[in-house]
Length: 274
Image 1 (tube, one colour):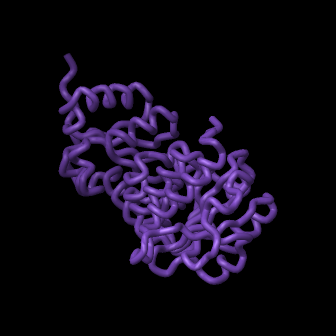
Image 2: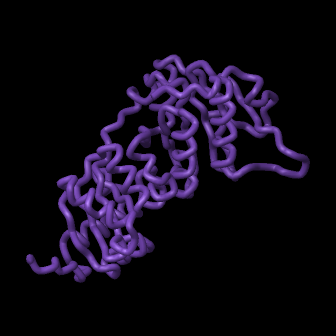
Image 3: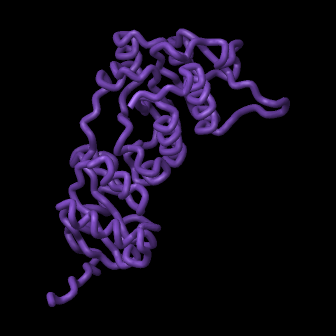
């Protein structure tokens, strides 16, 4: 019988130091084309999507459940390089990952704006100024559930491939295109692709049910505080507001995006292309 593999417990281990640096530095994630995903469900999503993985850190907590043990076997069988690490090491990379016992380094997809906007899916979502990565991730998860073709993060948005966004999205990044770009690039691309621009605006006259969201559309949402900037509102073909009860001035941006995505899906008869 072969001896048990000793888990890495040094915070100065080169692989551990790189993972910690990737977690903290968005520019490094872009340069290395690598991002982090942690937790059992995101890891299951990665394997189901056959996402390209660069490395897997596996901790002792993974073996504490049948689900975790099965995931451990599947990751090992996938051929991805494995680092057995202590809970302390995992926690040094991302707080909370030690309790789950699995942290992945995944290859950043080479998604480009043209491919997202030319998608056969009728709706693409663009967000501006959404600084909370939890909101960005939740928007991604709802966009995937309601049949959107992708998410474009404009200026002021948290990185959709930051670990908190990946965690909130529960691994949606493995299956739904997402990218960051400038407002100018996005507007030009949307026009070229023939997509109508529909902006969420609390001051708008029309409600989502008043406009045709079944046609190729780029739906724009902004931060719940400032909303969309003037240049995006003026560039929009249509503006819509979400009707709310008296005394309520705004919704969380994820809730607003989900409401708009749901209405678009309803207008399409909840027909979701593969």
